[in-house]
Image 1 (spheres, rainbow, N blue to C red):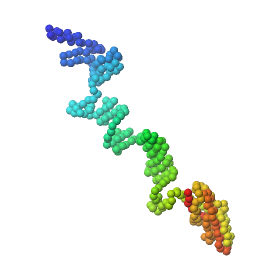
Image 2 (image 1 turned 30 degrees about the horizontal axis):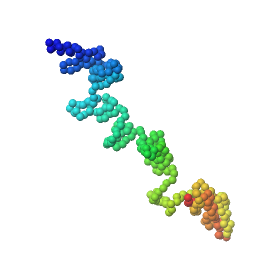
Image 3 (image 1 turned 120 degrees about the vertical axis):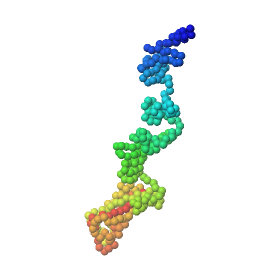
Image 4 (image 1 turned 60 degrees about the vertical axis):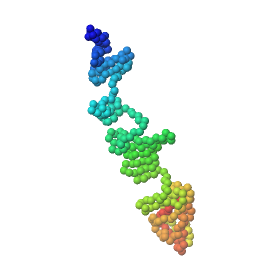
Length: 307
């Protein structure tokens, strides 16, 4: 009688979910075994089946089939290891690394790594970026400083909000400002130094004794094919030498330099600067001898120093 009652209960608990039926047994419950997922609608919400392809029990939530077990798997011998291969895959069933995320990630606390690769899976330095930029942004100052490498121009630039501030060219030349460097250091603009500016291994040192910045301008005076200074008289170059290209803001200090070319008793003349403005220089030639001094195709240098 008990066996008959038990079989009756089993028969009443039997039900059809899909083409196959689920059956309650004394030691378990058999759900339908299907290779492909059936329809999952609101009317199907709560139904379950065993997917023989993925070996997972699936449940209908009213819109789609979802797994009824954790996505995490453990090795029997090492329950603390994730996945059968010892690798974690998020949004991927074939992780290639210890942690393989197919998508974006957010970390709200500290991230500590010995090497970080962006665009590469095998970084060789603490931070390695392959075919990408590096930017640092200050929301308070609304500033973004970015290192950007140009494959077309073969240089690395440092930019402030998109404006180039420095350029590091392949080969070692450095440019300050938006200038492609043609020397070890190319500067587009002015410079300020608190100490000496030493050049050529210390052979040349440029420094002013005041806070005023000075510039130098080397120019040549050409007296033409014929220039005569009468005995006991003085003469000047005419017209005056134009030095406006130097951009002096006031009259510079001018020094007569070396003879470049020409013939005549140039050395017997007393040569001095008669006048100088920010744009022109007049040179005076005085003959203290008793004879006229004639010069031919005389060219000599003058050095202007000023602001």
